[in-house]
Structures are given as C-alpha cells and as structure tokens.
Image (tube, rainbow, N blue to C red):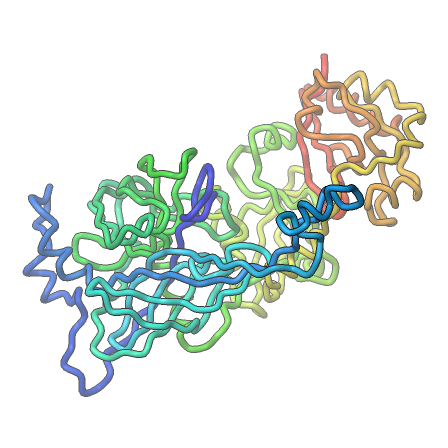
Amino acid sequence: MRYAYAITSALLLGGATATLALQPGTAQTAQNEPAVMAATAPRPGAPMSFADMVAKLQPAVVNISTKQTLTVPQQANPFQGTPFAEMFGGQMGGGGPPVKREGGSLGSGFLISPDGYIVTNNHVIAPGAKGASVDSITVKLVDGKEYVAKVVGRDPSSDIAVLKVQGTNLPYVRFGDSTRSRVGDWVIAIGNPFGIGSSVTAGIVSAVHRVTGGGPYDRFIQTDASINQGNSGGPMFDMNGAVIGINSQIFSQSGGNIGIGFAIPSEDAKPIVDTLMKGGTVKRGYLGVGIQPVTDDIAAALGLPKDRGELISRVEPNEGAARAGLKPGDVVVRVNGKEVTPEQTLSRLVADVTPGSTARLDVIRDGRPVALNATVGTRPTEDQLQALAGGGDDDGFPDEDDSATPSSPAANSLGLNVVPLTPQIARSIGVDATVAGVVVASVDPSSDAAQKLKRGDVVTSVNRVPVRTAAAMAAEVARARAAGRDQVLLFVQRQKVGVFLPVKIGK
C-alpha cells in the first residue's frame, strides 16, 4: 500500500470522521442539508449531470499543504585524504554538521463545521520522512481563501487527523451512513489530485468491507471513481450528498489511477473523529498476540477449513491472551460470537472491544473447540508495538558454525539442514536465550521451504510438537506423512518475531 503522494501497489490517501451540531443562534445550514439536497441531487438511475450537486458540495472541500524541515547529514567528501580533497571539499561537504532542507506535502480534506473543524488523513499532515518536522499547515478553500491550521488530534492507526482553522460561517458537510452503501451505487470523489486544484470524479462502489492488508483495521469502500495522489483526505459522497467515506488509498503499480481506489467508511471514521475533536485519544482493545491468516496451506496442515479464523503465532506474557490461556497454534474463530473472517479480522474485532471488559474467544486447539474468556487490555502505540517485535540485520548466522553436521532426515523430507540451537548461535542470530529448537544451516533451493525459510531461522515445533533435535524434527515429519498429510506446520522464530509456516513434504 502507498501514500497518496507516492506508493507502489496500493497507495494511502487519508481519512477521518465527525459531526458537529450547529451552534445556537446561527442560521447557517450544512451544504448537504437534506432539504437542499432534495432539490439538487440527481434522481435515481443514471444521472444526466452532477453539476448542481457538486456546486453545493465543492466549497466544503479544501486543499491542505504543509511546510516541512528535514535535517540530513552532510555527505562525506570521498576525496578526503587525497590531493583532490580541497578542490571538491566545497561541493561534496566533509561529513560536518547536519544541514536543513525544506520540503512539503499536499493533500485534501473537508470542513465538518462552520467554525473550522477539518477532517483529513494523518499521513497528509505527518512528517514525510524520518527526521523531518512539520513547520506549518495551510488550508485553502475553493474561493482562494487561505487559513493557517493547527492539529486538534491524530490517530495514525486509522490514518485519521482533525485540524482546526479560525473562521466563522464556513461551508461544511455532514457524514452519512456508509452501512447503507451497496456495490453499484453511484459515488462522487472531490479532492486536489497532484496539487492542480479542486477536481471532481464520479464512479460506483466497486466493493464494501475491502481489506487491503495495509494495517490492522483497514476495511474500505472500494470505488472506480478516479482517485490519484493528492486526493488523500478528500470526501466520497453518495447521491444524497452525504459523506460516506474518506478517500484514503489507491492500488497502482505506476502511482496513477487505474480504477481501484479505497475510502475509509464513515461508520469507522466518525467515532474516531468525534473522539479527536474532544481532545481524546482513541483507545482500542488488545489481547497481546501475534496472528496469521489461515491460508490454504496452513488450513491443510491443520486440517481446518480455509478462510476461517486466524492463527495465534505469539502470546505476549502478562497480557489478556496469556492470562486467559490462549496458546501459540490456537485458531481463534469467533470473538463475542462474531466470526473471524478475512473481511472481519481478529485485530478489528478485538479493537472494537472496550478495554477492561471481557471477550469470549471461541478457539480451535488441536482440532477441538475451546472457549476462553479474556480480559481485554489497551492497545499500545505503534512505536511500542514495533519495539516489541524487535529488529536487526538479516540472517546473522555465524560462519564458524557452518561446519556443523546437518541432519539428513529433515533435509531429505523438507529440504532443510538443521543443527541444535546453542547459546552461542542464539546470541549471534538475535534470538532470546529462552528459545529452544533447531536452527536452519542451509535450505535446498529446489524445496518448498526455500520460499519461506532462510539460514539462521529457528524451528521450535513441527505441527505444534516441540523439537529440540534434528531427529525429533524428522520423526514429526514422518508422522505427518504417515497420516496422509503432504505438508507440516513449522513454528519459526526469526530474531524476536515468531510465525507459523506451512512447508510441503518432499517426495
């Protein structure tokens, strides 16, 4: 997924939601007031023109630009220490103090109140690079008026932000009900693509509840209305003139529109905007687990139906999942009675549970149903979650251990040469000292494992049975083959991240 201003595959564009009632004593009405729209909205069926409707809605859509400062280190002089150092020193720099450079970003947004509250995407007003800072945010209306905006609140997880400008009697629009949207409905997108000025495109709803994989809570309205870089944060309107989405992402291999755009539904955005407008922080439920979708291969390895539930790959100690007894290898199929599906993920269902309350988890463990009750915690920030996941270089497997004798039984069946995990190897590859298993020394490039594992990975279990030696690993693979299965499910630890991987058994 990409941001609206530069991404390959799918591009983020932005979004948020909120409704603000008119202040007592003002006679101004919303640009999309039902009585007004009744006289201007196209009649059902293919409309002859959107012009009257756009004329009412466009004034509430704004262009957003930022000025940013990026601090970058000076490039070292490659001729340092040679006779040419002085000649090129001025142009090349000498690795001296960091220098500051100016940059910026462009996006869209829309007014949701006459006194200047604006909804946009968080990425529109966030620093565009590591080390950058946003110095100012400018909002420009269709009539050319410009305002300096301040950030009221932001929620990076949903990519929603709320801004405020000082003004009165400003044109604004209200949110509608995206739950009523159906595939095939007409929609209009208004925004500022590529910074060329306010532009309007029309299309239909191509899909609802579309999951793109760009984040734990993404669930979009897909449209073929042309959306491009710079449309981020702009509104998607239905034929009643109501905002049913915030244009947020595009799928593209070139960076331009190919008819696959995504908008954050108003049903998801509005509660977040309401919270941010009040100065609050968005709180989401959290279990403390690592999860994987149940792919065809994983379903085959576990003997489960595909696209049902999500697989637990990690359980954080002292969090709700651990206290409830959830274990790696469990498949959670329902949360409070709601099915876990690719369109309704475990992350989303848990996030919607109020922190501190209890959630019933329906789990499949070793082929048997298990019911657990978990007290849901509060989800940490994205930075905190990244710290939990850890990081490091690629494989780091020590060269001095290359001489270790690999295990031929596992190598013959899975294409893996493995050796026991020693404390020395664990330190070298960044694995916690408590991890036990076998470490991959090499992978047969012609095997299925070659697409999934690499040297330095630690295999801790096969089909959820712990393995500590190559012989134990080979025995579990042989047991799976005898049971008629053509693949096994390995739990693989790569530095601080653990994941289940289905691997086909060789002939």
